[in-house]
Image (cartoon, rainbow, N blue to C red):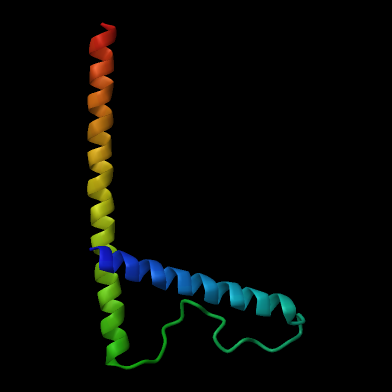
Length: 92
């Protein structure tokens, strides 16, 4: 799980760096300039099967991370509910 999280974080860091680079390019370019070839970050890329497999792997890691966060949130809610019950019983 930690490896998937580390990989996801590295991918997000790379995407943010790429986004910052593209924003700087757009700011530096005159409004009448030509479009940047890869200005759509969310457009599907033509790639090979390895890319598709990597995307599937990352999507699976994202689902696992989402499920882990949901379990953690449920655990936090449970602890908070127990604290509320204890506080109420002490006050009453």
